Image 1 (cartoon, rainbow, N blue to C red):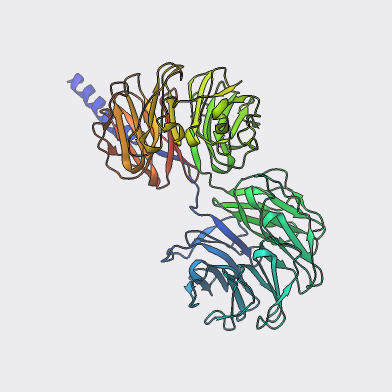
Image 2: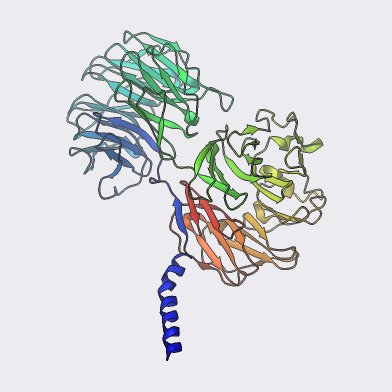
Amino acid sequence: MKRGIFYSIILTFLLSMTPFVFAQKEWVTVSESQWQASFSDVFFVDAQHGWIVGSNSTILNTTDGGKTWNHQPNQPLPFNIELKKVRFITSKIGWAVGENGTVLKTVDGGQQWSKLSTNTLVALLGVSFVDELHGWACGDGGFIMHTQDGGASWAQQPIDTNNTIEGVHFVTPEVGWAAGGGGTLLHTTDGGNTWQFQTSATVNTLDAISMLDNTTGWAVGAGGAVVATVDGKNWEVKQSNVPNSNGMPEPIWDVHFANKNVGIAAAEFGVILSTKDGGKTWKSFKDRLVAARLQGVHMISPTEGWIVGNKATILHTTDGGTTWDVISNANELRAVHFFDDTLGWAVGLAGSVLHTNDGGKTWKSQNSGDVFELFGVGFVNAKKGYIVGSNAALLETLDGGKTWKSVSDPGDEGHGRAERIKFSGAMSWKSAMASYAMSFGASTHAWAVGETGKVMRTNDGGKTWVGVDIDTGFTGAGFNNLFGVHFMDEKNGWIVGFGGMIAKTTDGGETWKIIMGYAELQDVYAINSQTAWAAGNQGTIMVTTDGGETWIDQTVPTQENLNAILFVTEKTGWAVGDKGTVLHTTDGGVTWLKHSSPTLNNLRDIIKTPNGTLWIVGDSTTILRY
């Protein structure tokens, strides 16, 4: 009797625990960007009421000075376009413009937006309203249109240029300016019935214009161009002193002034410029808080300003640009690596690096010093690590990522000047190619593969990197883009890439066996010297159980591109891909099943930590844990 009661208690306890146990076997979202959009413009009508617009018909609104941002309208707009500019004249009345001749209007602060008839499909890039009735919009092919009834009807205004008009700004119903391609600057004093050319003193495209009044204004654009006027007629070139991240001055996408002295400009690769003397001198903000393109800037006062940009970027300053807070930023993550159960790194586009030192509970940004795409990461020990990416990037840290420095020379152009990277003879040009993946087979042995057959390795923990020719038999695979690499140890490794190419070595890369397939392969994972899986586009998963002699297609319940694959045992494996795809098998891939995924973002990499925790990273700062 007592034994029966005891068993009943145990059974009841186990049953009560079952939901909890199963709950632990789901993918949990650790990180994901709140907004799936790139932002084009920001505008505040007063200190409390502001709007942001961007891709995917995104409109965000704040009514508390930016403490919170919410989607508008309540129901998603019935079309998907990129909105380029937004302007309000009161906290209730405003307009937004964008692709396909789109003009939206609200009269209730953005709770409802109406699409206005414009009779054009021109991409509209700028808008300016001076009151409830008089407004202008501009765009591709020398296009300017005008409304005198708040947008109910529009009429095109003729101008004598086909250059794209990127920005327009009116200070009264009669007086306005427009700027655009080839340094175009136009001025009107009759509401746009006639437009007169002004000399901008630059041939660079001017992407934005901001007039403080009818005499004082600034325009910015390509090649770091800044021009200014103090009389509304004559424009002078100013030195912006923008950095040259890709060998040329960064383009400046927007500018706004709080008064005649204090202004901020937003540029490419996260560059922020500020001036305290009316634009005579400009200073670049010392840090790049994000490497995204910054497209819109608005100053509420000489101390408070907002900047928005690609990858859901929102930045805020309350001290005139001396310091900035990152309100939002979406990192497009491409690879993740854990050195142990505690220390991990994730890397991605626009030079992004995230680091955790608490087992993934929290992730913080590290400054890579790079503004391009980063695709692979690995560590020799807890302090020494490497990142590979586009533009021949090979980055090194000796302090756990507090600082990263380039081992490669992005300007080398394949001439072999990087002291620690050696591509000899006919392969020397490959040193300038991108690397798309990295694998550590042992603490001192790592491989990186990439563009046009680029393969390099280190056998001494990163002190030297040597180019490897995997296609000595001239199969053509040596020119294929290589997307995935996995080394089990110092000797045994696999590489996959374009055209279904699979290469295997059992002697540390001295010799390679290459086969060609059909589907583009993105990743490969081997559980032992005989058994490996490769995953790729259109739901492809292939398996070999004889060391690569033969490969068999496995049945997969998706056509989405698969970007990464991982097996934790010979039977249990995972594959991840586009649109949040997560696949799972418990029989070595004989059957693959879709597993519940908490995201629709593209998933790019999956790894396992020593204690068995699984991690997935992907677009929009997506980090999942299992």
